[in-house]
Image (cartoon, rainbow, N blue to C red):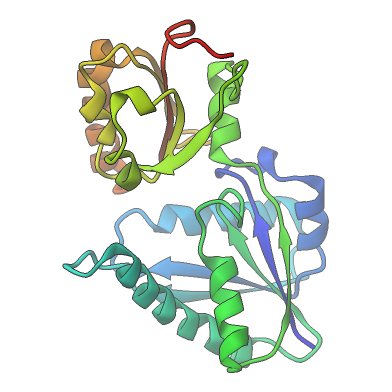
Length: 260
């Protein structure tokens, strides 16, 4: 029986790999690296994964197979329908890789940015493939350090405050929040700069781009005071590298809401 591991590798710095992730990698025969077609800067993400393999594994003990996948196209479709279509295309590629690039009894792996259970589609894609019956395999999930944890580390703040919940959402969903609902909110995948909708409030922001990497950028303060700097930094960073992974926390000043 073939086996697939989804290994969380953290936000890009090899130092953030867990011991369990490293030990699992040592059991893998073939690593699959997926590369988006015509995506400027995406080669950086493949390069980082290769550097992780080189750092922790002996040369010659594993194979690397790189495959092209299409980028999700934003269209007039409903968001969920668009993602479902894109994941279906990705599932076809992964199915063929497992079929043709693995022998029976071998272990394969995908090195997943951050953690496989937090805003990543690989787990659901594997379950979809098995449900379709196109190829048979076992799978296991190896957790990873998330950008949310690194963000809190770098800004030296706790994620939780007394009596408060923590909301983890995306920029797309954040648009639906009113300022009064944003108490302690972690935001991922914000290509819309949705924080700008809260520029006239007293909300604090703790922002990080390329967290855990050599290109890491940090910024924090009153959103209304630093929003222009933040917009400029994001624009310049994306222009320079072709891509931007950023995470931030929007937080009401302590004491602004009573918690019983």
